[in-house]
Length: 100
Image (cartoon, rainbow, N blue to C red):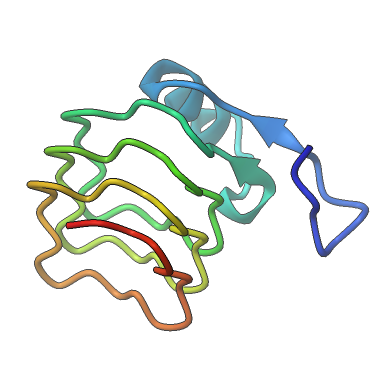
């Protein structure tokens, strides 16, 4: 189970891009979404505001993250191989164990 620092925040778990798109379209804040170990291979997340999102161990292989805001995101152990990280803001993001 994902331990949220804000106990009042929804613990929404997504497993793929369809779930993530639906959550964001429903207006759920990225910081309230846990997409850990999700397979987002090849997704276009360019320019998105994903501040604080939980992407622990997620497969972000070949994902376009160009211009995305990932401040404070949990990317611990994420696979960023071939991901486009051009102009991504990773301030305060946890990149421990992430691989590129």
